[in-house]
Image 1: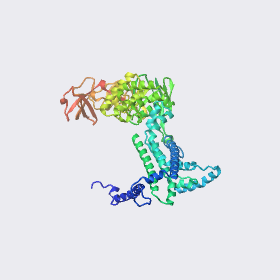
Image 2: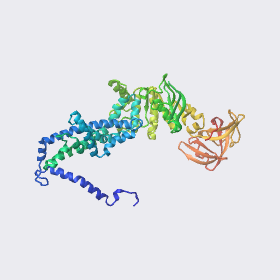
Image 3: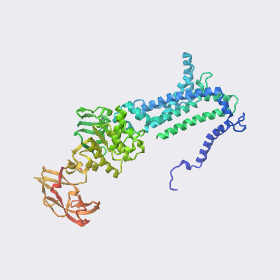
Image 4: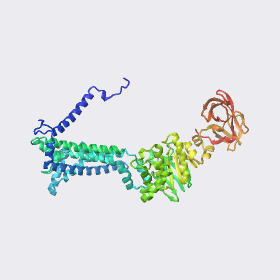
Length: 267
Length: 353
């Protein structure tokens, strides 16, 4: 053996461990999707293939309304988070270093480190006061909260893209009579687009999937898809819940894969 | 047309400040191919970036057509740059790249299309107008960068080592092409390079820079034949240096058999002689004659370099055209007389090497 460098792949347990992790991660999902096609009423009792639970789900008004709420929420939150993150990323890479830049970086990424439950409890206390004061009980609270914790997820790919961008391109644009705004519109933004798209997709999926904050902040009677599913779990379990979960999984996968494809094409 | 007066640049502040450019002054004439030549870190790129407007000067004036533009932002200067890495916009087609400046200036689309077509014809890339810039070869990208910078008809075109990323053969082609473009457009070019051969073949005038200062500004031939100092002599072409002194109108070289007349003040001097001016064998009248031991012959195809040792240990290199003399003119190990014709000698003030 000529190469004596440490290689984690050569450790005896590495392959076994990796395979075990993948099995634990993906087998339950395979089982879930498979069961969503079970025509039997009772979970675990296979009764043939059918789309009956998908049909049931699509006729279930509570599910449809929770689904629409989730999509609106995720779209709004991802839009706000991506816009904010784009501006933050531009401010932290395209300007001369300024005082407090490190702190801003830390504050931006704070939601990644603070336990979500803590943020949820803190928000409940504050928003309860606001609710009482304004009397407003709509989706706005959830949109604000989701936007806030989605920012770091949108920020990461955008900043990575900006840092990898050749600064001479912006210099060249200035040399070719472009003002700041023209340069941004014609050079920086188009080159940043794949990063913004990836950031948006990530924020969207993170918001779509959130339980803790949504469950704490939702108004009575209000449900997002995850909180609706949680509620269903406490009642009678039918294969419909598998169908709904499978649909949620499908949306997430489509968005992430779509964003990945678009990003890859541009680079 | 461009007057640079006492322009200087310092980076950093206080004790850590570095002076990239000491106060330099020079003028560039309309339609001139002017080259800034020097080793890396000599300040040539900093000077170019200040002319382009990417770097604010620490002091001095940049007067273009009678107006001081030292603090005008780059997008308001009638000056365009060809960047070392080309800096083509990767998300745009070749035509969009070339038309970028005109779009930024708010020209009508018809006018942009017309100019872009003309520019692409000028660099012979009309057939690639709708390709993305990333799909082009290095040489093609180079031409697009040129066309893009020429499209808005700048008063001055700045070129920052534009040929350094190309291979040798392509570089030679582009040298000819650049010179042709400059003649055809009649534009003023300021060209930055560290390659002395490139500078000699293309320029009308060359400014040799070192340590943030101008060492000499001259036409290529004068720079080669009459370098102002030892740095310029050593940087442009190959050369031999021998130390001697002048006394009463005579140049005395310790290695030489007899002094030759020299119009120079008395005192120590460095004698510079180009290898191709060194004559092997027969002593000529008015020449310094030395005895040299042939140490090595290096064959270069068109010529042979003869490395010789002088009595006091100094070395001397002669370049002999292979077309003129048979390689039997001398042999390794032989001691032969060597003549340095008086007209080939250039006397420089003595300084530390």
